[in-house]
Length: 257
Ligand SMILES: [Zn+2]
Image (cartoon, rainbow, N blue to C red):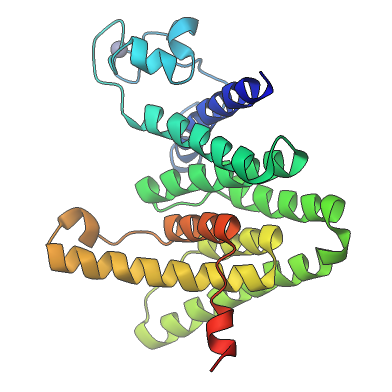
């Protein structure tokens, strides 16, 4: 019963992530009169309001077979995938930590990363409200749950930001181009605040390697979708999730050298 409740809550929070993914970029990038609450959820195609029963996470999309009830326009599959991802993340957290504050805290962290990945992939944007929010939540959580590690987390946040700033600065001096956004720096700082310095360095390494691999595979397969310039945020987010769940530690490799 408690697990069922957790999963329902995760689906509802996944639904909220959809709101953030759709509305935050509009609020930041356009002059449209839109906030997180207003106007009420509606079909982007015909503007018909969505009945509450079709607004239920996952089930609403299935009931409608992915089409608007009023105009039958396709509803982007993103809505379903984001909610499904939220539920999968909740299941992983429950398996790893059981029903606990730790599971809830890391679920919020992962859900934030999940929403940021979708926004960055579509708009090359990592909204401050999410990256900075995660940074403070990470420090707050560790201050409560593991106060002895707090100095490590603060150091990790500063180091994460500083490392990417150094990369940005050097790249700009050499090529005259902006290679990294400030959002990436804030995101890595947030990851450091949650996971600590050692894990943060592993996340950075894993993100660089996976981005490189992604590009090479794209060239080999000649797939345009893989070859476009992808933002770095989703790679950082994926790497953070992998390091969090597996505890993967590559520093062991170079300590053996
Ligand atoms: Zn419609």
